[in-house]
Each structure stands twice: as C-alpha cells, then as structure tokens.
Amino acid sequence: MSVLAGASALAVSVVTAAPALAEESPGGLQEVQIPADVEILDGVAPEPDTAVPAAAAAPRAAAASAACLGTTAAYGARGCFQPSGDVVWARDTEKDGMSAAVGVYTDYGRPAAVCINKLGVDTWATCNKDYSENGKVRLRVMRYDGGNGKFYQPETWSGWIPVDGQY
Image (cartoon, rainbow, N blue to C red; front, side, top):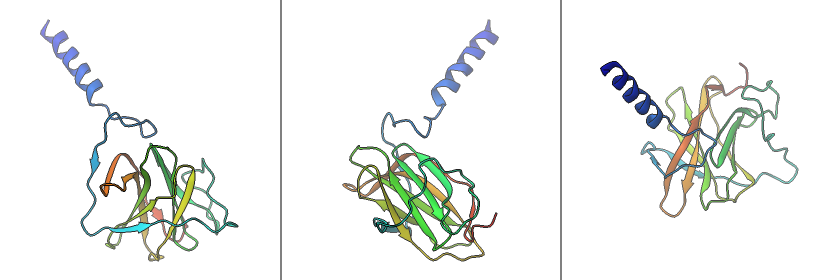
C-alpha cells in the first residue's frame, strides 16, 4: 500500500510541477530577473523595404546575408538574430498590453542587452548592435510591462548563435 501511495504522490508532484508550454498564455505572471547591468533598447520599426523574418523560420537557417537565425518564441513574443548587421528582431504576437522583449547574451562577457518592441501587436522591431564576429549570442524571449518596467514569463532561450552566421 505504501508503494502505491508513494507512486501517487510522485505522479501528483510531477503533474503540478510541470511548466507551461512556451506558446501558452501564462496563468499568472511571474517576474523574470534581469541582470542589473542590462542595457534596455527600444526597438525601431524596420525600413519599409526591409524583408522581415518569416513567421516560422527554422532555428538554424542557412547562413545568408539577410537570414535570421536562432528563431525563438514564447507566449506573446518571437525573436531572432540577423548576423548581417548584428540585428536583433523582436515580434509582439499578443494583444495583451505588454511588449515583446528579446534579451541578448554573449559568450565573451559583454553585458546583456534587451530589445523591446513597443510598436504593438503583429509588428516587428529591430535593435542594431555591434557584436564580436568571433563570438556567439544567445536570445532570451519574454514579455515586458512598460508600466512597471518589469519582465515576465513564460520565457524561452535559444541555443548559441555564431555572430558571423557560420555554424
């Protein structure tokens, strides 16, 4: 009997501890901690003739001058990195009063930066930074509340993306 009780308790703990899928709406907002030295960047709308990333781009697209690599999505946000020009793309995908945020972390010690899309739902915003061509970046996609300046889950991380686009 104690084995069954233990198995039942384990099953209940596994079910209740499972995180929400990244594309699901959060049941309740949970604040995400951001490093104190993070640089907050307001994304800008891309130029009218700029090709925007495909909605469902592959995480590892073939390296091309305008390819957007490391496509990562969480509820309400999508992001990717364009090696040509070191451009971070952030897309807001939910009309919920919050903004899409894409954090960028490096493997060489540069302080993190977060690109915030305050342009509204169904828009792309870009942040142009200069990263070391010998380094790699990692994206952290999440939500941002401009009213209180805080970041929220769900969040998703990309794998490491070579800044030069060459895997």
